[in-house]
Structure formats: structure tokens, C-alpha cells
Length: 113
Ligand SMILES: Nc1ncnc2c1ncn2[C@@H]1O[C@H](COP(=O)(O)OP(=O)(O)OP(=O)(O)O)[C@@H](O)[C@H]1O
Ligand SMILES: [Mg+2]
Image (cartoon, rainbow, N blue to C red; front, top):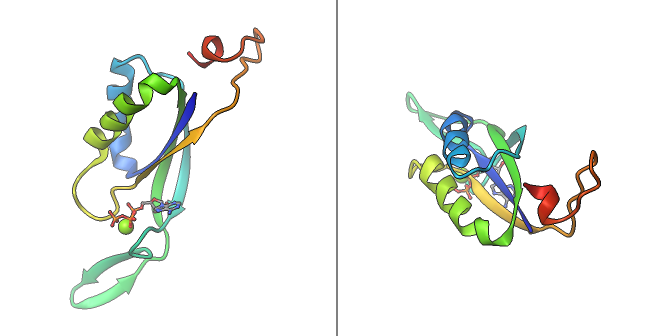
């Protein structure tokens, strides 16, 4: 299993969620986040004055899935969240050792769905 952690533009979330739902992905966790990437939060030039915003609001979307689903989900995230502009975000993929559903004590593939 893998945890797909995507840092995205908040306004892309509804579209992403709908697309994930279409392929049966409903288990996810969302965290409001703030961060910077390569541009260190610099957004651009406003009326000739360069201004700096150190941390930009982002959403962190985490979903744990079986290995075979990773490529499809990454493609969906890119499709839903790519604008081509700086700040589109990043995807981190983590190995997951175990998943346990607390209610039933199921583990692994049975617990992740
Ligand atoms: N190396 C990193 N580690 C952790 N979080 C990161 C990292 N890079 C980016 N992020 C998170 O992703 C958000 C979006 O990053 P962003 O898309 O600006 O990345 P970038 O590398 O600057 O790419 P781009 O040039 O397309 O803007 C950041 O606000 C931050 O929350
Ligand atoms: Mg950036």
C-alpha cells in the first residue's frame, strides 16, 4: 500500500474529489496547509511593486491505496490540478506498512477500501 499525499490549490479540490469518486476512491483526509515551493512564496509583481507572501494557502489531500491504483490516481490528480502555472503543487508517495480498521480489526487490503 501507498499513501498518496498531494499538496494542491484549494480551488481544485471539488473537481479532484469528483474524479476520485468516479473510480471508487472515497477514503481521504484533507488538511488545510500553508507552504512554499521553489519560489519561496513569491507570487509576482503587483502594480510594479514586487511583494512577497511567505506562505500560500494549499490543501493537503491524503489517500491510502493499493499499489496498483497509484499510477491512475497520480494521473487523475495531475488532470484535475494542473494549470501550468507556478504553484500547482506536488505529489509525494509514501510506503504504508499497515492499515487497521478500528471497528472490525481488519488489516491490509480489507481495511484500506
Ligand atoms: N519539497 C517540498 N516539501 C514539502 N512541501 C513542498 C515541497 N515543495 C512544495 N511543497 C508544498 O507544495 C506547495 C506547492 O508547491 P509549488 O507547486 O509552488 O512547488 P514548486 O516546486 O515551487 O513548483 P512550481 O515551480 O510549479 O511552483 C507549497 O506551498 C508547499 O506546501
Ligand atoms: Mg512554486
